[in-house]
Image (cartoon, rainbow, N blue to C red; front, top):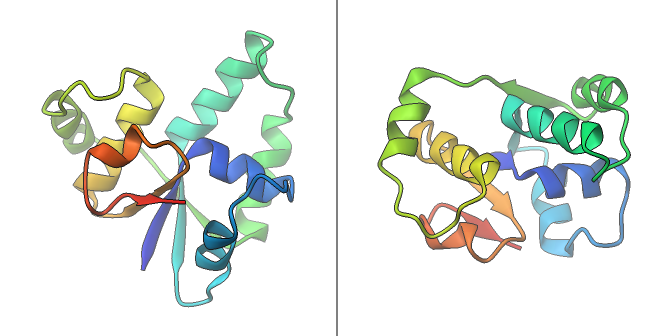
Length: 126
């Protein structure tokens, strides 16, 4: 299965945070799953660091991606087209772009946000 990690799932994984649901841990840990991290998540982390909403070292996070066998997902024009067609269930621009990427690629978006799960059956709520 190809999984795209929502930003909070990525941070919980990298920090070995007890908030990471067991189901998410099992899915990320499976050797036969391919795990993607969007550049949108990296952008979100940096913006939250700059505004004081998050304390994180973006460079260290990026260095951990290959260590965890995570692949980076860039943003493409096709993602923006899908974004423009999404209904307004959720207003967070970062989440909306991750949803669009997941639908467009296609990937299963792994999230803990119930509002995100409203968009597609391919979104996995953990």
